[in-house]
Image (tube, rainbow, N blue to C red):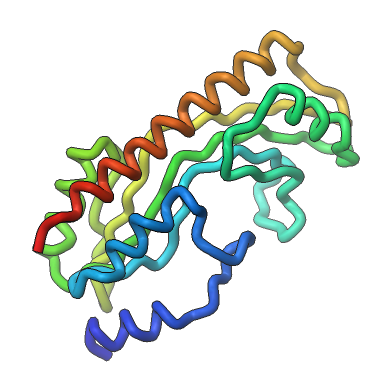
Amino acid sequence: MNFKQQKAKQLVKTDKSNIGKWDSKIKGLCEKLNKKKEYYTTSSCGGRIVLLKASNEKKPDAFLFRSHKKIGFNELGRVLSAVKYDGLVEFKMNSCILHVACKSLEDAQELVDRAKFAGWKRSGIMATGKRFVVELISTENIEFLIMNKRQVLVDDDFLKLIVKEANKRLGRVWEKIGRLERALTFK
């Protein structure tokens, strides 16, 4: 199958993500990339705040809370008080991530260069036998254990600080998405 056929096949696939659609914050960037003949997106996340069951296994019920928007201290408190899981729980603020199939190595390198200029510092090319895939990742992540046996492990002052910092980092992530979207004025 050539690149054009691979792209057509990918873009009609059903979204298999947990939310079943693009995050609103990264949708415009994905659409802009998919309109270019040299690229198509294969997966994306515009950044999120989650509570997860701490485990080395990926399980369908691992998410206890997920937000692709900024959260408030009171919201986090309500969510934590409603957790009925007796194991370890992690708080994560994940940065944006985007996987893009590229027609050629040169196209892949051009996208990586533009992404790095827009602030996506952990970006690179993953060549496979079938295609070139660019992985674009920003660096604003927070991750720590927040609960054990239904008990919050940190005090309210720390939670307030974490909510403020996670929201600030999400804002930076969304700015980088916008910068990359504006940088895609080539070809």
